[in-house]
Image (tube, rainbow over the protein chains, first blue to last red):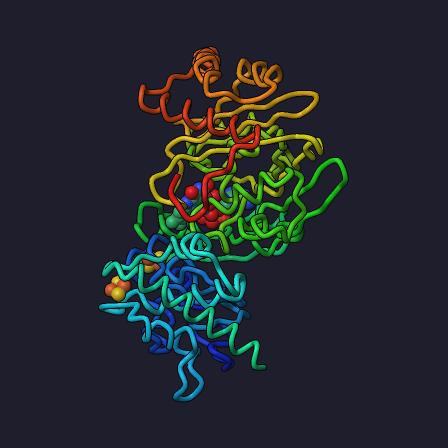
Length: 163
Length: 288
Ligand SMILES: Cc1cc2nc3c(=O)[nH]c(=O)nc-3n(C[C@H](O)[C@H](O)[C@H](O)COP(=O)(O)OP(=O)(O)OC[C@H]3O[C@@H](n4cnc5c(N)ncnc54)[C@H](O)[C@@H]3O)c2cc1C
Ligand code: FES
Ligand code: FES
């Protein structure tokens, strides 16, 4: 028998809990229990990256991540990136580079780029392409997305130099 | 894209997991990283009553370096292999293979055990584990079992695992330090499942060559292995002889490949062999 269970996790820094069914995916729970609409489901097959969120510091496809797995974990979504009114440098870079048209894919790209820059602070074009192959932009803003990653990386390096 | 309601259990011993699977009479399914199972649940092309999550079982996420071999727990993710978080017995072949499986978000969750247990013929680990001479271990109602990776797959999506068996780990013998390998996966988009793939390992004491992404089990290529043992370098003019050896091996294995598939496999094999002699690997950010 499928029965509800209560999971507790840290969501964008805050401890939260939710009563969920075992078949529910994390992206559904974020959307419908927490009203976080940034990660959204599109393909439901792990092919497009629109549903990307971080679990314990690593990007996962929210559509393939059963919410029960989040019990005890740290979950971070695009909504948690800004500090008050100050957007995250990656978000800033996406705006400045014009790295979107409709914006449907943007939260997923931003979350993936956060991780990319953590692992490769100054990525080559090849590293960017390889890292982002699981994120699709149906508006095909890819050249600008590449620019945004370069911009964010340069800003990050600049900030590190000043710090 | 909503899965149907399903029950979920997260046992904490292998015996309990096997017990839960046997009690269910086939209505329960093992869940590991969920990267193949959840897409099926989302599409409702698979229906079970209960998921038995094995990621909490002791030892399934650990890895140990035992000198002449490395043992990986079934739930070690592709990402941990890719980044070197677990010991690598393969002189870099496994991290390279891992980095070409699916996409980063999928690699962060998908497990080597899940990939082997599912036995999608195009899965990268099936052919890679066979080529490395690995052994696959499981525990079932009759106790522990194991077999060489080469003999693990019986047909597409069908393995030696019984309905109630839990794949627990993989033992991978360490390659000779002088071993040279090449691997080539043909796909149109980076991270897709392979249309064809080949692996060639040249090492003192025995070369290994396999085709993956066939319609069933990976195909071992003994005549190609013999040829590799005699090669001192790679020249494009060797390709014809390599292709003939491959065709003979496929026929001797009682298998057949369509013309297109044979062409693709031959190309992958020639590129894998060239790579074992130092040809540059395909760039990561591009489809092969
Ligand atoms: C978009 C996308 C692209 C992909 N591309 C590739 C690719 O290019 N190459 C490739 O090789 N793979 C690819 N995959 C598949 C991926 O590697 C999966 O991680 C893998 O096939 C399954 O591992 P899992 O841990 O997620 O297993 P799950 O999805 O949890 O389970 C898969 C199956 O194995 C069974 N199972 C899992 N673990 C065990 C165990 N320990 N004992 C017994 N049975 C078990 C389950 O019951 C289920 O039937 C892709 C997946 C996606 C979503
Ligand atoms: S909706 Fe999850 S990857 Fe497309
Ligand atoms: S901006 Fe429209 S999908 Fe990427």
